[in-house]
Length: 379
Image 1 (cartoon, one colour):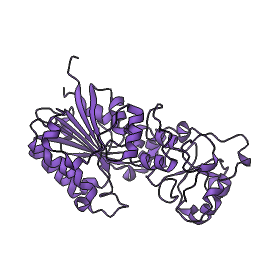
Image 2 (image 1 turned 30 degrees about the vertical axis):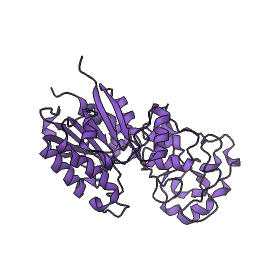
Image 3 (image 1 turned 180 degrees about the vertical axis):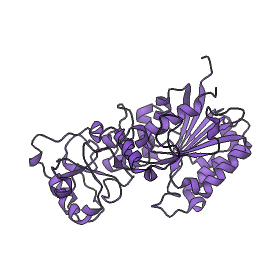
Image 4 (image 1 turned 60 degrees about the horizontal axis):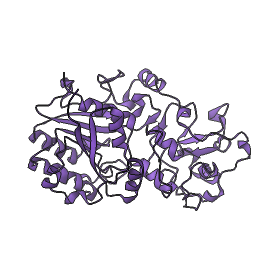
């Protein structure tokens, strides 16, 4: 009580996932400035927060520029492409890593460095040269770090999206659980509720993995579009008639109104014939779905799960065509990211753009409790 409001800078702000997480964390902090180079993402951010992020190149910022904000905390979610398994893994040699490296290298020259840092990225970042540089600079500038790899599944959300997180506090500030210092923790325990403190999600014993999934809510809790009562009369959209994994853009696809019709979300039979064996199919009662990438809806292979709208009696013996697969809508993807109900896209943002922006965002259900822990005072 009585403590001053913490001033926060939000780098790579995207569509506001970090800010929503800070709000959900219920800490005495506010975003005083956000930074994002993507103009479309800034349209969405401004629509929801009535504030447009700074859109200049982060690499142009100087130590003097950052000192002017007098920020207590930096929240950073830099581009993941230099480190993702699907990318070229060029690490520090990737131009998309340069701005993050530049920000890190300014820390020793700040007159008023932040007392807290929070970094989010893909699994794989923790073994990168960029990560090594991050840890090196934080150690030299008197920060203590705790690192995590966590998935929404561990927080009751039926969504497999493991991500790396680095939490850092500048001495004399310290973490509540000091025994976690300089460790990489791969479970919410002992910060939240226990599962297995030392195991990765995919390496858990079968019994523990079963218990983890059973703790999740079913996917149907996150759905917006329900099957129409006469869904046998609804046909998949003919606009996706190509057999390529790439779904061609159509006027309907570019319509931002996701509630107009179910038609645009159904997967065309020709895609089922070619790519059906590579699709991840889930059901309303499923308690896990795959991570949605920025290419979801554009590609059907390896970009996220598809929902069976007809529940088969025997899943292993019912054809995919009979199960009438559809894409999750952008609102449903936002729900699985744990975005609040009042989050919305401006009307001018196309369907494909919505999926791309969500694919680059983060899980509020995971980040919020981590931020609450970061901002909490050590006892």
